[in-house]
Every structure is written in structure tokens, then in C-alpha cells.
Amino acid sequence: MKPLLLPRTRLLLRAPPAAGPGAFRLTEKFVLLLVFSAFITLCFGAIFFLPDSSKLLSGPVAAAAVAAAAGGAGSLERIRADHERALREAKETLQKLPEEIRRDIRQDKEKLLQDARGRKEAGAPGLPQRLFRQPVGAVGQEPSDPAVRQKRDKIKEMMKHAWDNYKRYAWGLNELKPISKQGHSSNLFGNIQGATIVDALDTLYIMEMKEEFKEAKEWVEKNLDFNVNAEISVFEVNIRFVGGLLSAYYLSGEEIFRKKAVELGEKLLPAFNTPTGIPWALLNIKSGIGRNWPWASGGSSILAEFGTLHLEFVHLSHLSGNPVFAEKVMNIRKVLNRLDKPEGLYPNYLNPSSGQWGQHHVSIGGLGDSFYEYLLKAWLMTDKTDEEGKKMYYDAVQAIETHLIRKSSGGLTYIAEWKGGLLEHKMGHLTCFAGGMFALGADGAPNDRTGHHIELGAEIARTCHESYDRTSMKLGPEAFRFDGGVEAIATRQNEKYYILRPEVIETYMYMWRLTHDPKYRQWGWEAVEALEKHCRVDGGYSGIRDVYNNHESHDDVQQSFFLSETLKYLYLLFSEDDLLPFEHWVFNTEAHPLPVLHKDDGNKEDDQK
Image (cartoon, rainbow, N blue to C red):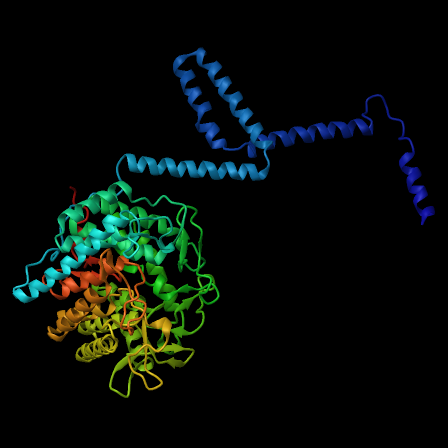
């Protein structure tokens, strides 16, 4: 191969031919070409690559030029100085590494957002002014029956006992440990504090505990802070904090509650930044980074979680004038309506990236429950104008009746769980809310099936009462089964606990309001007596580890939903129907009342204070 290279080498070393006196040699031409190329590159670089050219044109240089025109030649020095400073900054930026430039851009963006937020808080709150009109039924009459009034007063005393002990031992923290007499915090709320305070606001208001409501409002005003670097459950923060603040505003008219509700709603919006718009379950509310529970069917979002934002987000748009909240939850429906439903049922898991179902597990209890509740209540909350929500609800109920509802050999109606076409004959305490849901939706049931839906609600209420009555403590287990010769009894140790849950009492309240059958008040009072006997302790109320045991073993947690839901539903059960009447209010899944948005409400929101 060498002989082939030698001639070419010699050719490169050979001297160039002689040139005339008026011509450039080849090397000189090459040098001139390099100089010219460098000049062109510099010009284009100045035009295209100097950072923030709009700032240079609209910032100090432009301002100095205007000053020069107005103030004469003395301003030329300032122009020159500003121009030189801008060039120095541009040169420094060009010398930085790409990672440093990206970091500076992020910091500038964060500063702009903080400045905008600061201006928003320091000046006008950014919310449209609205004339507050307290909805019908925010306050009600005293019960006419003295015996009923006495029972309702007892429930109010229970609320006072729970609240006073929370205030004494855990004020400002999320929940109370009534045995240890100290605060308890769940990781569901990240670093956000005050869950019991926000959850209890509306209960305090409707029970006319005015001093307690005032101190709770003052805490919210001074201490409720969402600017935390923490991962939270979007679902739990929405139903407890957003729902509680919205309800407190609609009952009292205090602007601080509207402001805080919208502020928190805005912080939850990044959860929807997924390929489908189906929100993440968990969100860091500072970074905006979301993810799903690691145990949830291949990274899926959970039906009961992403399906239980609708009521609150529609109201956030209503109170803020910002349609984005309602748009986010309406998009969830679009995704769901594009999907095939196995046997007309909605599986509990949906992948937010692919938009496809996860494993085909269907439950009207945990993981699914409040999705169905919110379909019905979305229709009711729009003054029965949300026809899409109505159709989705009644179609789902038809599929539930066909595939999940069964009757035991002893005559108890229950709702089983569906796993890939096979039924598990188990019913959770959470599922007991469905009795009230069926009854509440009976009035709009298709094909004259109103009576059937009321009866279905009554049968579920009876089954859930039996789950209470068949325990030693007359309080219901977390789940109960209908197999192996048992009915409405928990057979597994990890299903025998009671954590002050409200769903059975919730169904009693709905059934009482819709039928006025006295047995529902009787069953509710049985629950009051059991709570007082087994759950009340010196430091508040505690859950029970085994309701079949004759001796209490307390779990040492006073859940915030005990004040928000269990005691509120009991109070309403023994109140007149004019307190939070169903034609004017719907309850979110944490029992926070939200007003029905009547057709003429939109014309009132632009009224000025």
C-alpha cells in the first residue's frame, strides 16, 4: 500500500506555481477567507445569540435613549454605560456552561412567579368580587319534638368533647391521639397542618358553636399555609381541605375561606399534567411533580381518587371565575367516555399515560366508591342540568345491579366485588354509603324505577345495620363477608377494626330524610350509645381494633372525618329537614355541604360588594 501513498505526498509538498505581482497567493486568500468568515459569524452571533435581546431593547438601553431625548447630551454617558453593561452580561452568559444557563433561567422564572404571587396577595386578591348570599338552609329550626331535641343536644356535646380535646392536646396539628393526648399527623397531608380544624369548620357552624368557629377561622387566617415542600394525596387534600374551605365560605361568607380554597386549588392543578389529563394520586405541591401509588396496578390512577374532584373543582371555577378547574374535571369524563367498560362496569385502575384500564377489579367500596357518588351529585349540583353525569350514573347503577348486587340465603342484600369476572362476596364499611346514594338518586331513576331505588337503599341500610348488630360492641367492622356459612360478619382479623367511620350513619340520615321511617333514627341512636360506651375516652374519641371483642383495644386516633362526617350526619339525622335541605345542598364525600348551582346563579356572581 505504501507505493500508492508516495506520489500523493509528493504532490502536497510541491511548491505552488509563481504568481504575478497583482495576485494573492493561495495562503493569503485562505487567511482572508478565515477573517471574513469570523466577521460574518460574529455578526450573526450578535443578532441571534445574545440572551434576552428583548430585554436589551426594552430595558435599560431603551430607557436611556428616551432619557437622552428628553434630557440632552448628558444622557449619552448613561446610554454608553448601560450598553457596555449589557454587553458584559451577554459575554458572561456566553461563557457559562449550558447547565448554568438553564439553572439561571429556572431561577428567573421562579422569581417572576413569586413576584406575581406577591403582587396578587399584596393588592387585589385576584378573585372577582361577589355579593355573598347565604344559601337556603344554612341554619335550621330547633326540632319540635323534645326527645329528638335532647338527642341532638347530646350529639352536639359529643362534638364539643372531640373539639375541646383536639384544641387542648393537638391544636394546629392534623389529628388527635386521644389516649396519648398528643398530636397525630398522617402522611396523606404532607406538611400541611390543621386537617381537623378545616374538616370541622362547617360542623361547628351548623351546630352553632360560634366561639369555636371563630377561633377556627382565626387559625385558618393566620396559620393555614400551603407553601410547603411536601408530597400530598390529591384526593384527601381535595375532599378535606378544599371541600372544607368551600363549605365554610358558603355557610359564613368569610372571604378568607374562598381565598384559601382557590389558592389550594391552584396548587393542585399540576397533578393533571399527564398525557391524558387523568391526575396523579400524589403531588409535591412545591415542585409540581406527581406520581401514583407504587402498589396501584402498574402505575395506575385510582377511580375513586380522580373521580372525586368534580364537585369541588366546579365550585372553584364558580367562585374564582377561572374555568380551568372545571375544564380539568370535565376532561376526565371525556377520557372515561372513550373507553370500553367491561360489562358496563368501571374498573378501579386507569393508567394516566396510556389512558387504558389497569387490572379489572371493580368495587363500590374502597378504590371505587365516591366516583359513583360524584356522578349523581354532579347532576344534582347543577340543578339537574348535567345530563352527561346523570346518564353515566344510571348506566353504572344498572351494571352494578346486574353484576354486583346479590342476596344472601338469609335475605340480606349486599354489593360484592368483581375481580376479572369473578365475584368476591365481601362488602366493606365504605360500601355502606351506597344505600344513601341509591335513595338520593331514586327521584331521577329511569323507567319509573324510583320505588325500586328507594327499596334498594333500604335493603343496603338493613344489611349494614346487621353488620353493626352482629358485633359485641354494636359497631361495624371494616369489612364483612357472605361466604363459608357466615353473613354480615368479618371473618379475618384485619377486617375487624372500626375507625369512627361514617358511612352507615350517612345512609341512615339519607333514608330518614327521604322516608321518615323512625327506625333510622333508632338505629342512629344505637350507634351514638355504642360510640359513647366504647370509643369515648378522657382525651376525645378513639377507634377500636376489634369490634367482636368484649374488651376495648383502642387505636389511639381521633380521625378528622369523625368531626366532619360521623357527628355531622348524626346531628342532621336528629334535625329538621330545613337544615341543609337536599334541594339546595349536596354533600361532598367528606360531608362538606356545597350549594346547588341554580340556573340563575350565574347572573348573580358579577354583583359587586
